Length: 349
Ligand SMILES: NC(=O)c1ccc[n+]([C@@H]2O[C@H](COP(=O)([O-])OP(=O)(O)OC[C@H]3O[C@@H](n4cnc5c(N)ncnc54)[C@H](OP(=O)(O)O)[C@@H]3O)[C@@H](O)[C@H]2O)c1
Image (tube, rainbow, N blue to C red):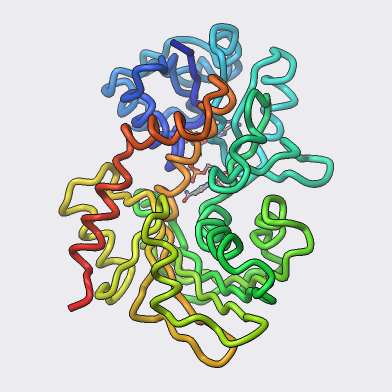
C-alpha cells in the first residue's frame, strides 16, 4: 500500500480523494486545506484527516484538524497537488523538492519557462510510458486532455493525410459547485490561450494546431468546435465516428440538445459528482465538406482529469504497464459502462 496526500480540496482535489478512497492499493493519508470553511467539516465527515499550513493552524482552532501539511509530507509516498493554478509550482519549490517527495501537478501549472513544474505534460493515451517512475509530472488541463482524446486517434488512423486542425474552445465560466463564483452575463475572449501550446507538448511542437478560446456564462462543461483539414477528400462522418468506437473516455452521442442534457443524465444515473469523466462527440453535428471534417464535442471539465490522475499515479508510484494501469483505473471508474449508458440514452433515433 502506498500513501498519498492530496494538497488542495477544491473541485479537483475532492474528486481525486473520493476515487482514491476506493483504491485498495492506496491509503489517502489526508487532504490539505488553506481556508477555515465548511469544506473542512465536509472532509472530516467523510473520514479524512485534514492538514493545514503550520502558519495557519491558529485560524483553524474551531476544527479538529490532524496537523500541519509540512509534517504529513514526511509520511507519504507521493503528493497530488490540486492547488489553484500557479501555487503548485510554489509548493514544489518550498515543500515537495526540499522533502524529496514526488508530485503530480494539475493543468493550471506550466511545463515551460521559469515556473515549469515538470518537463512532461501527461496524456495517458499518448505518453503513458514516459511517466514511468518519474518524480514530477503535470496532468494536462481538462481542455488539453479533451483535445488529445480526439487528436491522437485521428493521427494514428490518418497520419500525413491530416494537414491542419482549427479548434475553438467554448469554455465554461465556473464549476457547478463553485457557487461563490458569479457567472457573468458576457462572452469573454481569451488572449493567447495556453491550451494549444500545452497540447503540442505531447502532440509535437510542429503540429498544425490552431486554438482560439472564449468563455461563456455556463457551468455545464466546455464545448470544442474542431475543423480538421485533409490533404485530399475528407472521410465521411461515419468513418470519423467509427474511429472512436473503442476509445477510452469518448462517448459518441446523437440527441443531446446541449451540455446540460448530459449533466442531467449523469445526475439521474447517480454518476459520482454528476461527472461522466469523458468527452462526448455530438455526432449529429459532424459534417464532411470537401477536404474538411467539422465536429463538436463537449468536455466534462471537472471529471475528465480524474481518471487521468489515477493513470499517472500508477505510472509514477507503481511503474505498472499501460495495460495493468488501464485495467485498474477501469475497475474504479467504470468508464466503459458509463460510455455505453450515455451512448444508449442519447442514441440516434
Ligand atoms: N475545475 C476544473 O474544472 C479543472 C479541470 C482541470 C484542471 N483544473 C486545475 O486543477 C487545479 C485546481 O483547480 P480547482 O478547480 O480544483 O480549484 P479550486 O476548486 O479553487 O480548489 C483549489 C483548492 O486548493 C486549495 N489551496 C489554496 N492554496 C493552496 C496552496 N498554496 N497549495 C495547495 N492547495 C491550496 C484551496 O483551499 P481552500 O479552499 O481551503 O482555500 C482549494 O481547496 C488548477 O490547476 C486548475 O487549473 C481544474
